[in-house]
Image (tube, rainbow, N blue to C red; front, top):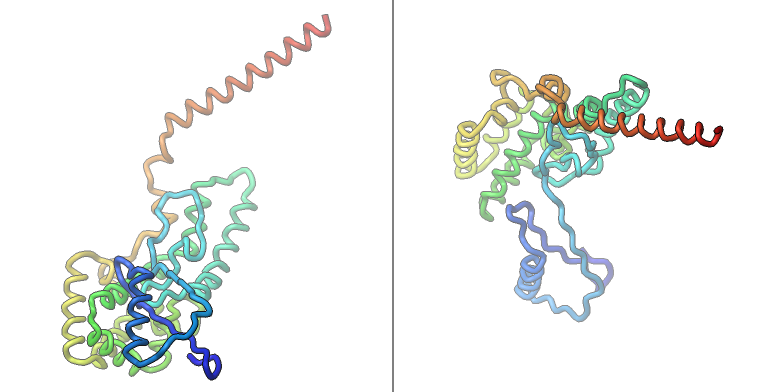
Length: 274
């Protein structure tokens, strides 16, 4: 990207990889690419290093720490987009935090954390995420020709379809093309028809392998495998909340200490009065 007549911004990017491509590898590729184009570098004004974790794990069911944004795994698994998704998801998160703080004496930190995280990762959001995870995994196995074929077909889709996939979150533009199992199934069926034959065959094989290894993709594009458990349900049906016996013992010991302090204060007061 030219910034002036003799100042140009160059970027070398690894779209998605596991393990990630090193910064040095990207730099070496950039230098080789520039040399192949006959570009002579007279001065490096600034270097920028950027690492974007693609997707990441969703929070663990039962955890008490409430993450938001990238820490909550809202980074798009296929695109790396995060800011708009984070802002959109946090509206519901903030609403739930207010409700929990207003619960008064009934406040339960474990249940509160489950409900707050559950506002980000609803079953619908998990289903949509799993569909995008498949897309990211498919991209990682493609060579250069496969990537070219993939994106050639992707951008032949209607604008709303591909833009909705890139955003991929409730209340963001064009999400109606991806917010349910049927729209995602339609998207996938149309997308395959836009791909070069070799890439389409590879995707069909990947779908079969993915389906064999778990229910995530099936839940994303069909109603037959049910839906993921909510964070509320996973908390509600736990047999206990941690080591109950240890917690009860600790509570008894702390209460005993409080009584000891009260007794000591009383004895001190009596001695002073005497």
